[in-house]
Every structure is written in C-alpha cells, then in structure tokens.
Length: 165
Image 1 (cartoon, rainbow, N blue to C red):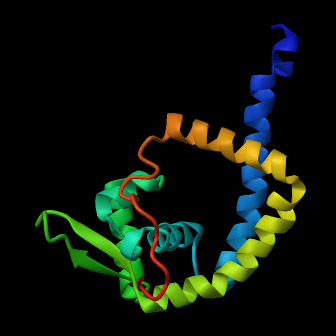
Image 2 (cartoon, helix red, strand yellow; image 1 turned 180 degrees about the vertical axis):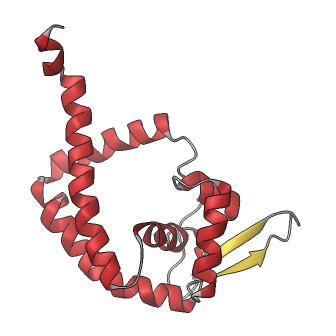
C-alpha cells in the first residue's frame, strides 16, 4: 500500500475533526456531570431552548439530534420525570406531541451555560481569530447540511426570549 495515501488532506481533515470533537466532548461531559446532566440531556435542553416557544415536535427533536425516535422518547421520558421537560399535545396533529423545556429545565441550563461557554472559549473559539472562526462556521454548516439535512427541522423562526416574547 502506498504510504502517501495517509498524507491525503481528506484523511487529515476528518482525523483532526474527530480528535477535536473527542477532546471537546470529554471536557463538556465532565462539566455537564457537575450539573447532573448527560451530554444528550444538555443537547436536548439546548435545542429546545433555542427553538421557537422553547419546544419542538418529538419527531423534529429526533431529526435534530443523533437519536432515533425511540431514543428521543426515552430521553424525554427521563427528563420529564426529572422535571426538566414537559410534553404538550400538538393541536394540529393528535398523533404528535411537543417536548417543551420547563422553568426548571431553563434554570438548569442557566447553571450550566457559564461554564460551558468558558470551555468553548478556552478550547475552541478562543483558538481562532474572527475570520478563521467565520470560515470554520461556514464550512461546518455546509458539511452539516450535506450529511444531516434534518438538523434544523422544526426550528423556523427565531427563538423567543426567556420571558416568552
């Protein structure tokens, strides 16, 4: 086998992305654990809090995450028992329901975010100047949209302020 194939920039790009993700994920997981959250619970809370009305249909939540519909159901069940989320019936489709962040869920997220943002700044965005960060965000969105076209399902419109406006 030709050794130069391993010098291919495509292999390097994917390898660097995987290594960066693993390093950041480990730092995030430790910080989430301090607040009694798993990484997937943080992702669910964040996606809901960033969505209009702090809610998403369960199917859209599954499309936005790496979870199956049954996986989302299990996570939402657990988070609902913990008081972080509630389910709300969909008025236009009786077969569908919304996952909605509760006040307790927003409070938990507010407790996690300052440390999470410090980690992001220290180990990720702070490593890049503004033009490099803008280019990275553009490139990541292009890749995300190609490989995960449902990543923004149900997130039309802008997220409301915490007071509901």
